[in-house]
Amino acid sequence: MSNSLQQAIQFDQQHIWHPYTSMTDPLPCYHVKSASGCEIELSSGEILVDGMSSWWAAIHGYNHPQLNAALHAQADKMSHVMFGGLTHQPAINMVERLIDLTPAPLDRVFIADSGSVSVEVAIKMALQYWFSIEQPKKNQLLTIRGGYHGDTFAAMSVCDPVNGMHHMFRHALCNQHFVERPAVEFDDEWEPSSLSSIQQELEQHHTEIAAVIIEPVVQGAGGMRFYHPEYLTQLRELCNHYDVLLIADEIATGFGRTGQLFGCDHAGIVPDIMCVGKALTGGYMTLAATVTHAKVAEAIGQGQGGGALMHGPTFMGNPLACAVANASLSIIQSGDWKTQVPRIECQLREELGPLKRHPSVADVRVLGAIGVVELNKPVNVARTQALFVELGVWIRPFGRLMYIMPPYCISAQQLSKLTHAIAVYLETTTN
Image (cartoon, rainbow, N blue to C red; front, side):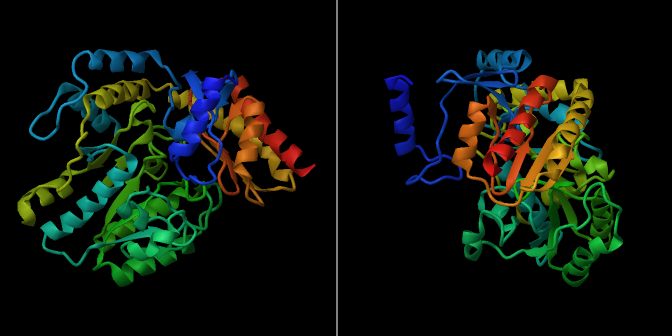
């Protein structure tokens, strides 16, 4: 390692606060030189197959020519203008494509600047909807344990209050309603009693519950659990029956990751409000959106409080991000993911499935382009990542979970390199 590179890394450790790590004892960071396709090149020379899609966002891979072209073309016109009182073609084009992709009648779009903010906006929409139709007592949320919806305060309030990463803030958060997570796994036989706890909560508290918020089919950062689609189907019916809005957090599950375009599609349901982000721009820039239907939007627009939704990020509708998102959605519309994701799923089942017999493994589960190896004990992240870098892969475990969510364009050989690395980890840490 050159002196200049070593100095840069030392400066980073001393001054830059990275996600979910300590400034006094930070996890090691690897200096990236470039990325292309499904590979990340480190400044120290290693080439790593990316198993994370940069936190599930870079679904088309890195340095994609179509996305690059969209970004460059827009940069030559304008990088940003305020969205208050102004509009522009990149935002219009992107929203038009997004509406084409999301299920009817979802056709009202608030453009946010991160997934967490889209959840904040969804919560505001739900609360303001009931305020606007003169039911202000409906101002709380209901969700299931084991969920994760972001790191901002309203989003934190609907993350798991005990086992989630935000438990230390629970005394500063709004008190919401929680029920046990669905007990029936995705491929198991449906058990109607799985819905009893959330049905009971709705029956007892629907007069104060504005909305149910849920990650469809896959609970992501809260534990990488997959649950039965029938839970969603019947939850939609319960929300209708008890007059409660349904918010689907599709930030991690949207745009093909689970094998369907959206997680809700496994159940054939349409939420009242949908949050999307991450893969929206193909991982190029931060952008998200909160999508709803006319009933919610018009009630807010005609109701008490002046009719405005009181949220306006400075970089809302950023033209660069919207242009890249429009290109990313165009790639989604082309439909290649419909063959790529099942291929990945089949290979993950074949290559990760045998690891379930390993004594250190509690469970192996696969859905779409998501592969999870749940261990009996938590991993040492620093030591594990050093091993993975040595093996030429980038996999970021957390807790007891070793998981991969690769770009859809990954080759069979590259994917095998990822699954082989997990197998090597199991052998080297237990023998």
